Amino acid sequence: MFTKMKQTYREFPETFWVISLSSFIDAIGNQMLMPFIALYMTETFGISMVQMGVVFIIVGLGNVIGSMIGGALTDKFGRKKIALFGLLVSGLFSLSFIFVTDLTAIYILVGGMGLLGSMGGPARQAMIADVLPVKQRAEGFGILRIVVNLSATIGPALGGLLVGFDFKWLFLVDTLTSVITAIIFFFKIPETSPTLQKTEIEPLAEIEVQTTPHSEIEEAKNAKGGYGDVFRNWRFMIFVLVSAIMGLTYMQIMSTLPVFLSEELLFTKQFYGLLISMNALMVVVLQFWITRRIKMFPALVMMAIGNILYGIGFGMYGFISTVPLAFLAMIILTVGEMVIAPFQQTLAANFAPEDKRGRYMAVHGWAEIFPMLFGIIGAGFIMDYLNRNIVWYLAGILSLVAALGYVFLHMVSKEYLAKLTDEQTDPEMETEIPVESPTDAEVWA
Image (tube, rainbow, N blue to C red):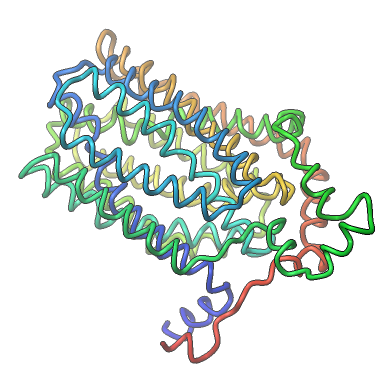
């Protein structure tokens, strides 16, 4: 087993592993905080689920604007600076929650957090696509998913313990993890933007600019344009739309589900933390094994299968009344998540030209942002005024709609995606991004 782990380590560039380590640290704070944020808001401020939905709408609107700005800045100024800015700002806003007790101030705070804290997201996603060739992206994003879920085996359980003392400890630790991650980014992670690297590693480029009116570097700058090319890519926009439908269901895990289980099945905060930790532990143990066995199948077909499992798992919550069945539903959901996860970011990266990768990742982020805008307040309205089980009936139906959407996209995009993959695996393109592989001494260090 150790030999296999060592071999896997050597297959991926060192920068990828440093990014993975930093993601693990940052995700501990996020995974510790997110399962309990809805409970914090409802218990501390006494708000309804509809008001809770308003909070997420404010965050979502900030995320839409912030990620769009961040994506453009990522393509223009590079990944590292924008990622650092997002980390530090996110930590600062999280710390601010400790001192805010007024609901109106909370609305302002979460709006600023959504706007500025989200700017680093496209940069961090683009970094992974930068350092990994196309053939490694599915496994790479699968490994990153394992890393994040490894932190999720710690985060929710730790969060459940901390809320027993005071909710403010959650925000303090989240701030600390953001600062540590920023330090690692600053000292250990190089700039990965292929366009910026060209200007640094090609000494003859300056001469070419002086003698050639349409130099390669100038063409690359002009190619960045705006978001118009992204929006005109109708296949990619359908992918974002279908992913947003999928996000409407998955978003309920961290918003309505903890409240539903707490009030309907009398789950304690600690018990819900264990449920989420079980989800994460399954991913840590099984994700890489599953990824290696499904990576050769069509990505969109695998995402359709994953959504069918989502439909079964979420739909179950509308019918069950016992704790063991609640855990069984989460197991089914987790299997679907492990089928989907390696392909979600991979497809977004494969759609994107390297000089527009930040913008594509920003627009792809809408698949998570729009569910935050509409899904939580809609589910909150149902939970406050209608039969709460309707949330899970609709979640099951929407999962099946998303599955059909991915099947349709597979049918109309097979040749298109194959052509993009061939272009991105061009040997000349792969040599544009020099990535240092670890030596034997570094492996054992």
